[in-house]
Image: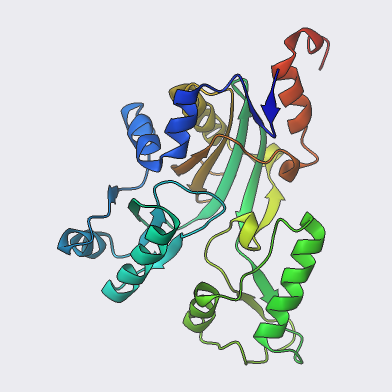
Length: 273
């Protein structure tokens, strides 16, 4: 049995492709009656601006990609839309526009048709100490995240970070008062400094059912289902992405690795609780 991290021979090429192409993910889930945000493929014309006017706030992302590359959240103006489309296009040829749905970012890991772990993911934040500038706080927090994740997580000091800080009424040169919290990214992706908070045991049953339904609709044995929710303990949701190769170590202390091994070698799993 060959594996590459949480991807194994048990995942078919078709299931992989459905997850890899966010348009296909949306199509499969919509046909299965699973809620997704209103969306369209960007055409780089007035139709995109009409979609923005209709929904007021958008998420713009490449159709194919991972790690949060090229994703812009909170697009509200034509100029921001133009910039976000270009950023997404640099990360992937086709660009997807989706209505922004406010709420928490929830990742649910499903293995062999069972929910094994669930975590709320939150965007990177810094906390003021009355001495250091926002830029210094970001650099320090980024170093902490890199050390804690073996280099997998960092907070980029890029145009996106500057824009988020500016929209919060600050600049990178400002000194935050002691104890003041400032969100410096909009996306909760681990690779851009996001943090993960286990909510497995408080997960609402409706969200667990939805995550399993996504796995069945795609016909995939291991999947990370990304939802936007009012709260992990509340039933309302939309599905925003499906990841065919979720990070299992991110969900400790939940037994994700053990359940993955059970999937690969079911003959040794019979006695597990």
